[in-house]
Length: 184
Image (cartoon, rainbow, N blue to C red; front, side, top):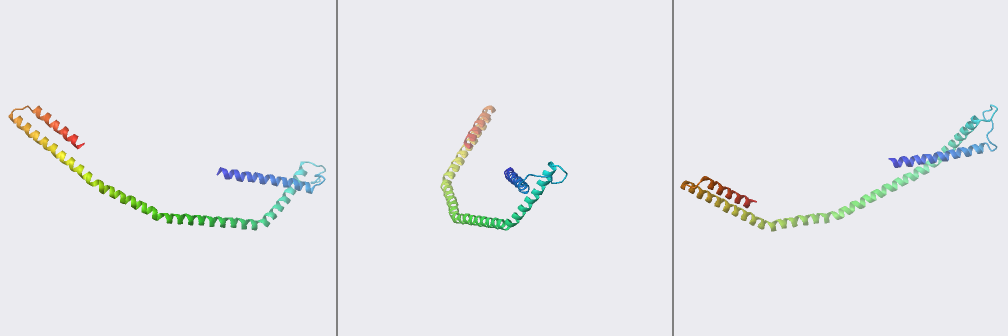
């Protein structure tokens, strides 16, 4: 907003300066021999200058108003032509972009389809290896659990035969650690 404020503020200042210059020029035209006793109070003072300046400003305003009325249709026509031209250019640009998007859309969709197909193929290719790894993991886990169960059975038998409970606990903990390692 600052840009337009400065732009229009500058334009207003320039317009004011031009108007003031025209008023001064009109005062000189109306009074080629200098300002006299305009208000007829017997002396030439600032009141005479103010009255003469006011009269000149009204004349300048009237002249400017007439010129604006004369030029308004021409300016309106030029602005209308500019707006119409801009509208056509925007519509053409939109149509051009739309056309390019329509042209490129099939290529983009083909690339997306190719990417999806490639991803499917990679998953299919990796599936047997993945399943082999899962089966190896399951077999290893079964073996470790089986070993754990066998160790527990042996230790239970040893307890029955008189082995201490602490040895059974230690064997169970060792088996649990082995299972954890296998799962990780």
